[in-house]
Image 1 (cartoon, rainbow, N blue to C red):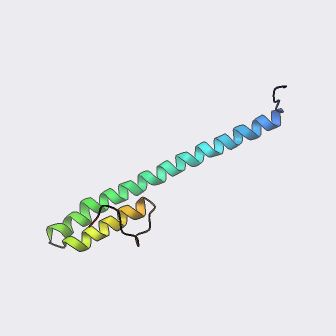
Image 2 (cartoon, rainbow, N blue to C red):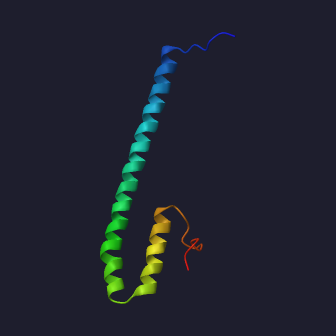
Image 3 (cartoon, rainbow, N blue to C red):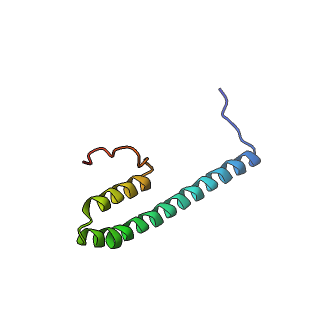
Length: 83
């Protein structure tokens, strides 16, 4: 069986696709970092203040929905282990 040979164009195409995939991965990581920062800020400011005012259950539900949305899950389903 002979080895597989690629032309210079095929090599460039493959490297270009790998570069695009690397860039997409970097963009995804950056977007998730921004989302995590927003979620962190929401918990530290909004949720904490609401809990201090005694608005417990509604804000806990809001937090669970926000975490589920960030994790890519539907908020209409019950989150396993909660309640």
